[in-house]
Image (cartoon, rainbow, N blue to C red):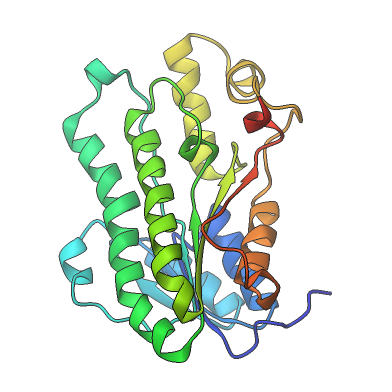
Length: 250
């Protein structure tokens, strides 16, 4: 049984209706937080919010104009929303590159900016940025994603430095390939790009650098996010926590 150590805390999870985000929403709710599930998929967000007795926020984070003057009264912010495009640089569509930077860099910046005044006022805040092993390492054909995750790492560290005196921590979690719809789509894309079977993509492309030869489960990422949101992690800030089966040990 998970301790309800987050009772009385408000949490916001972006991309919260599926994959890692949904696992985080369920985990934080199980620990007592009042969770807002933010997602472009309104129906899925409302369905999950009802399941965990939380609330839903139907939001298109690519529409950054609506976020510019936003103010959030949340104690825990989990920046999780993300997309992926796999293509060689010379063929990478400019619009795809820009869209990924908007969703995965500009939107988290605006949400952090919106959340900090409330966190500062109460002397407590937890910002957890769902980065990736690709925030620490590069892979071919993922120029926009790797660029965005590296930028998120820097943003998280700056937030840690500014937030520390106010009781606000900021950290990244860095999973390898997670068993989510986003990764399942990548498997098909990579199979086509490399001219191999989808099974070979998992074994020979995605897990080639990992010592543990399996995909990460969303619940494993959520557990780490939950710890970073807790009082036990009060001295943990500006860090990047890998959960990658040993990929970055190389």
